[in-house]
Amino acid sequence: MTIYRSDKEVTIGNEPCYFRIRPKDTNKSSTMATATSSAIVLLVALLNVSLADKLKYKAATKPVRLFTEEELRRYDGKREGEPIYMAIKGVVFDVTKGKEFYGNNGPYNALVGKDSTRAVAKMSLEAEDLTSDISGLTAEQLRSLESIFEGTYKAKYPIVGYTAARILNQDGSPNEDFKPEDQPHFNIKDEF
Image 1: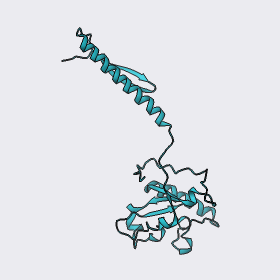
Image 2: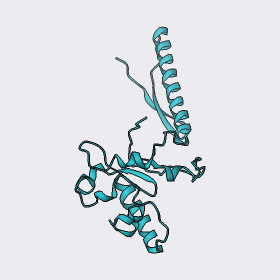
Image 3: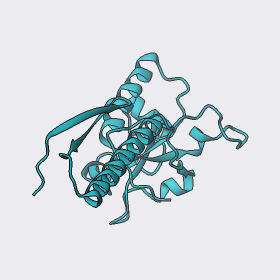
Image 4: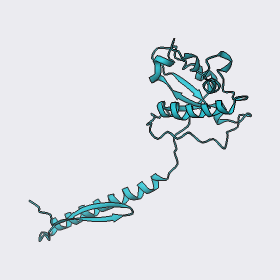
C-alpha cells in the first residue's frame, strides 16, 4: 500500500494542476516508474492547458450551409418525418419542435419553407408579405423584427444555415461581410 505525503498544487498558465508526491522509495525501479508516471501526467496537463488556450480563441470552422429558395421550399412542413425550416433575415431555423404551429395545417405554416422576414416584421400571414424584402417597413416594424428574431427564433430554434441572399452578393459573389450568427446555447449536429 502506498501512502501519499501531501497533495501539491502547481499553476500552469491560469489552470491549477494537482499531483501527489510519494515518500522516498528505496526501490529504484519503483522510483523510476513513479518519476516517469509523474512526468507523463505533468506533460498531459501542460498539453491540455496549452491546447485549451489556443482553442479558446480559435474561430469557428464549421461549414455554413447555403439554402437556395428551391431547397428551402422542400422543408415546408407538409412531408411527415421531414424537418421544418423557416428563414428570417436570411438565417434558416429548424422550427420542427414547434410542429404544432409550423407543421402542415398549423397556424403559422404559411411562414415555413421560405424567408418570411417581412411577414414576421409586420406580424402578417398575407401572401404578399411572405418575402425577405424589408423595403418600406416602418422603424417600429424593424424593431419588432429584431426583437422577434433575437428573442424568439435565435433563443428557441437552432440555426441550420443561411439563404443565398444572406451569404452572396447580388452578382453571386461571396459576401465578404458575412458573419454567421452566434448561438452558443445550441449544439448543432454537423450535417457535412
